[in-house]
Length: 284
Image (cartoon, rainbow, N blue to C red; front, top):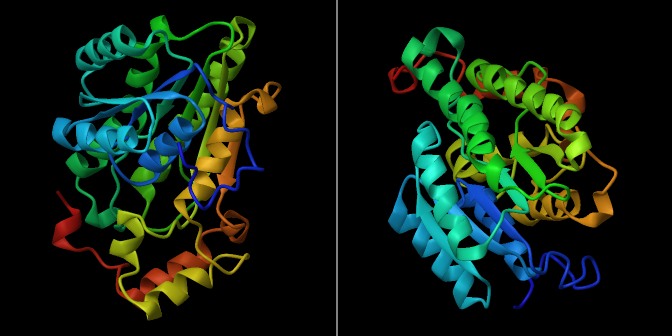
């Protein structure tokens, strides 16, 4: 399989994940699909799980066209029984799981008084409960020792207009570190990645639709640029590989240093963009 131009062959061995199997929630698009493609490029069979079966299967077909082994399955991460069935389906095709990546997420920028109780609950149910459900449903199929759990998290520091997400992802981080301790003696490593502003994703297209807004975002990043999906994929490849065999319980920011500046620069930017006021679209 041809590696992405963003990953020189010298960075990782082509057979880094040969013979392994990863289940990836939210794998039909965006950052998670980028990770899936990189896993497949390095020899890993990937099961892409999403609510939309057609989308998941289409993404899997794209990986197959590139020479990878992939399948798409459908489940809502809020539905534990559906996840159990999906895990059974995945392992019947590709065998036991070596990697579980909990990447499904829900998000929208809004001030607290613009988030309805149902809107808050929905994000918590998808981001936190969905992560727990994914790990719980996949655990019986995860190799031990040698298994890896990786979650896609978000900033645990105060981030304006993200109270619902920060609250949910703080739970994901705590779950990650608790499981790292609890399952360490099983030989299962548990880590998480915090993506920064990543170009070419649906979220950034929505938040920064024009060049002026893009420059405002870039000004909040010490490295002075957006990340690209391959940046997250590279971090994921490292964390699930044997190169990180002594790494567990880590919440890794891949954000160009943005987290070190705290939430103030982002809040000022959101104010200038007019996002700091409640909007009816954010109260669902």
